[in-house]
Length: 480
Image 1 (tube, rainbow, N blue to C red):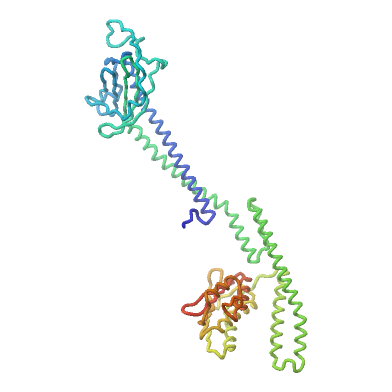
Image 2 (image 1 turned 180 degrees about the vertical axis):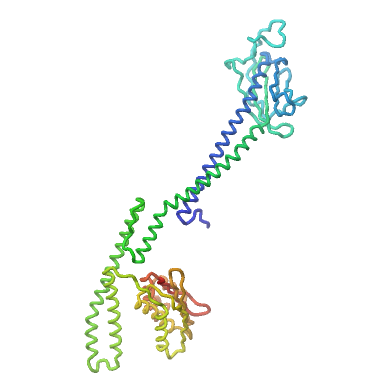
């Protein structure tokens, strides 16, 4: 299922802000276009309404029309101009000169624009010798309008050629029946300037949107820079070069910094307590081991010296862990760089003699320049456990390869033995010893200790099956 938003905080802010900017600019374009359209339409309506006002003065109260009072304003007097008017009265119809013999196409529903009012009483007769126009005091103005022409209503339609026309229609109540006056003009007069204005407007809004998006990206870069600085400082803390995060701004991050520093302090205290327990245990074992070594020095107690070797090994382990405990108590020091090739070579020289009864060869490909940030004794114990397991289970060959991968060094120890089942690999990934899970035997402690040592130095140990058979153990450690 695709994600609606990116994973990064910057990506989410950019996407949501860009969508908001696009929506706001689209609404602005529609609003501005509507305002411009109304402005241009008002000019068109004004010209049509002016013509209607002149035509209204030619209508008598009885519904007849005085042809002598009909006036064609330009461009209603030019044929084919697209501007036209027509009067529909009970006694006939009159048209503008621009129509010629043709009739004005009437838009659909034009009679529904305004219901005709009831007819008025017959006005008194005009004096004889009226001529063509009624006296000024008898010009027709519908009652109840305050002396104003009834407001025309807009309507759109097409002419015979399919061209869009804009109509203004008004109806006059007369004693002879309703009189309808229609004036029309080409709607292209509105659309042409509107299109001409919208092109630069849309270009301006597009440039504005690009500028706002660019400004937003710059703002996010500047605003989120403290998070990058915080990440760098946390990496310094993890590497042991800093004991706490020291960030004074922005103020929104200070509560988070305080919580992270409190977590660092709590972890440091927990590690210190664990190291203290190790030191106490080592001190507790040191004296009994010293007594045991003295007892083994007595004649006949250890004729072949095997027990003294094991006691000496136990004392070296105790001294090692005591040293690490003291280092933790004093704040520790930077882990020195340990060249990888010499440690691998020493172990590969010893292990074939331990398995002399089996034809196991060890092939190595470890560059001399590779070094890792790992305590030398820890590195020997880590590699020794894994190489010992590989030689014990291999059919004939063990391969050791190493390469640099960014800030880490990848070391792989592979054998051609029976390998491990997916259940055993899953048990190891879950943190259980393999001898406890019943999936394997004889390598549970070694693998677990190796993984703990790798994780202690910022690395990891993973297992993977080989094709067609065998097991590959991958160790990653920080590169020096």
